[in-house]
Length: 418
Image (cartoon, rainbow, N blue to C red; front, side):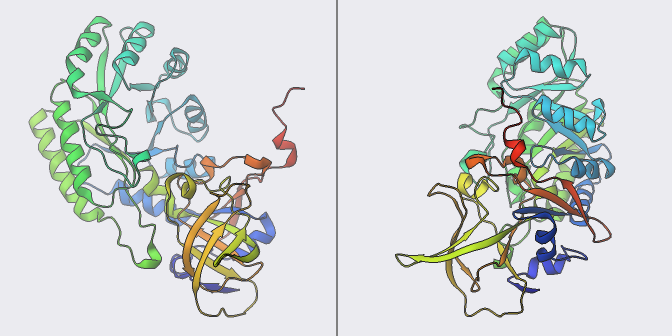
């Protein structure tokens, strides 16, 4: 197999004892491929972020909800947060206990709250009205509250979850109302949480956000935990030598903040983080096949089976993913030139990469879209009645293991009632 632009997967020995060509031949195209060692390494990096004793890493299952990957996170000692009853259900299937899960709800029904209550899972509410709803159905219970301290960060406006232009969290100005409702319904506030946004590459904003939520914490006595959220970014432009988030520096700064707060607060409160993307993004590569190459009005289009039904991030967030090229025959490419990589969906916006400088691509080449482990398969759909791909894990011994089957045509109609 000839690899072009493939320094990232080579350095990681990502495909272990197999190759992209063999994987596509065995499991079909498109195909999500994950690497167990990369996944475990990222878990360990975050667990070792600080020296503070009561520090907890929550895996954000919304980033990737494959059961096999969740089991790896559980094996590595991570806890979990959930955004829906469905996420709670799969987390418990993966081995997480009720006490391991924090249900971070957003605009949910009383029925969804009851689902968590019945399973002894702590709920974090997102608004004054939701706190009142919770109090009415679980008077005397434990509760957590998500606050919006006014700090936001992220790679796109759609993923900024803190600050003045977001739907999330209780405003600091509403703390007096919170205290009234806690007393009215005899609720015990055991924790508070926040999330400033997704994909920060500079730790300054995260430290600022941490300081803000710690100021909120001082308004309440006897908190058991403070969840500072996530958003830890990864370098999506590795082929252009984009630098990594400096975890060592961030960890040292955060460690100082946590120790100082615990001393002032008078208890060794537990601190949580939610680095879902950071843990899983780099462990995934999406393989797809080139089926056509053409030029329209001076633009070279490389047509693939990588429609936005398979990977939604580029069309939804204008996000960048590096692309590697794999070829079954040892045929070298000519000089690199700009191409636009498109999928097979009947939409003009079905673009994976626009005006990307890549080595000459040939018919039947396999493309590897890097860093798709987060918000890849979990956002895939059957749009255009396309089948969702299989998922494969390269285990610690370098061998491939099927961890989700490819859709069948029968799956498309399984839920219909005629």
